[in-house]
Amino acid sequence: MVVNNGERNQYLISDHHEPIIRRHIFDEVQALFSKNNKNNKKKSKGRWKSYPFSGRLVCARCGRNFIRSANGDVVTWRCGSRSKNILLCSMKGIKEEKFKQPLVQAFIERYQIDYSNHSTSQITRLIKELQSAASSREFEQNRFRLDLERALLEENTAILKSSEVSHLTEKRLAVEERMAERESWWEMVDRDYIYRKEALDVLTNLKLVGDPVKQLRQQMENLSFLRAWAVRIEAVSPYLFSITWVSGDKTEIDLTKGVI
Image (cartoon, rainbow, N blue to C red; front, side):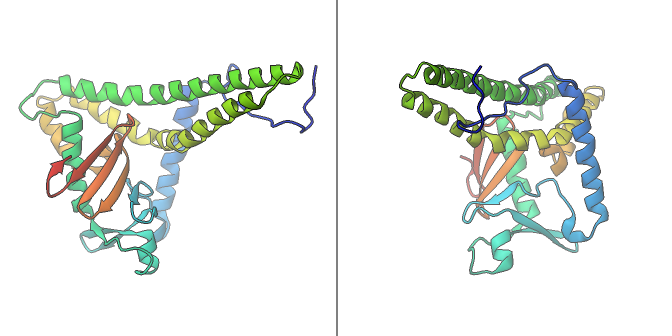
């Protein structure tokens, strides 16, 4: 047995062994924590309040998140950099209705919502999309973990045999780099669990009403409902947006032209 006392890199691979707590139970507990955090923030001063797109509406010009501000009934999202100093970023403020409008339009295009179809088939399709989100994310992460385990095994085997390892080290580093690139995405999808759960509950109830598509149209005016699918919105300008869906697909929309 070879003991690694720090001479070589060490790695922690999550979910490698049979868990003490099953994944779905863990996720449900995390959802409760997330919901409690939201409620606690709402009880705090206004500047600490969290909204559906807090941290998810991003300025393409400087990379900072937008900050929500309200003046009466008018809600405006402003670039975090420009809020500090107008010289830091040229992005102007975006009224909430301005980015909500392209979001609804993109949702209709992406998920092929047909208002003339009054059956529950569209509702069923949306439910399947949300249900597959977590499993797809977990499948991808497990695949990367397996690739990393194989790369580590190959590298360590070569070390024990005193063989050339540079190419194996490069292979392992490439896997680690790809995992690091996806880590932030996995974290965002995990944090959105509460939105997906709430949307699934709404969709399940919609299947029981007389005109589910009419009710769906009303729900689409609710940003919390849309957040179950829209993980991130990048504002290129007050009229051009790039929306990343829970599936990983992207939709670009120009308010002057529609979906690109």
